[in-house]
Image (spheres, rainbow, N blue to C red):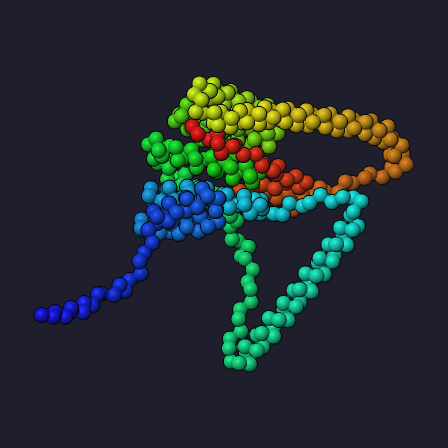
Length: 369
């Protein structure tokens, strides 16, 4: 009466389970929303690679558009978090009174760095000799990062350019909405990199799409107007900046009137009221900056005129004292005046000038359309 169970041998799975790119995409978006941009970028990069493989290597396939958009936006936030948007260190202003002390500190830091480098070099040589004596191959030395490797900001630009190409072919409402987001992020990159004219162009394209989709009185349009004003102000186009700020102010005030009738919108109304305060302050700042530049230009013109009169009075005496002609040296262009370009990403640099830091951001709670 006893029946013995037969032992069943289950087949062993020999192939590796492949990851789902759509799941990676959703997980990456979730991490990005939580503020973990670096971890999110790793997942989104893997999602993009898997989607391209599924599309048989077609990196501009429509199915890759959402992943490119999410990955590019995430990389932009990673670049901001790195605190080195321009790819260069921002020099700190030194106090004239402490200049000598600062130079001494710099020399001490350099000496310490050289001593550490020599110690590390000696340690690596000793380890290599031991490995060779034991018949082991010496470990390779740390190699520096390739100079031609793109920065995080440049990579974000190139990824978003792929998303732009894909969504430009999508005439649906959802496709236009995604294209507007792509254009907004590309404009952000240009604004951060100091390419203000291109930032203005991209913001204007984004605003045209959002106006078509949501109407001229939507908060999505006000957000673009705010950023467009920042781009104009950074480019010293103060009148255009003030115009954008005032138009955004009108849109926000109109939204406050609509929402105030419902008491459940109290928190949202408070956020919009804070935006109104910020916009009024931006208008005042732009006007003050315009006046300051005008005053500086007038002072420069006045001093130049006085110097010209002095030079004209002293010229005859100088000519009599030194009758031989004076040849002026040729003007040479400083290396910093050159324009650095890559195949896709371009950024100009000028001597004695640095792109203005753009730290203003549209409040998160005011982004609803």
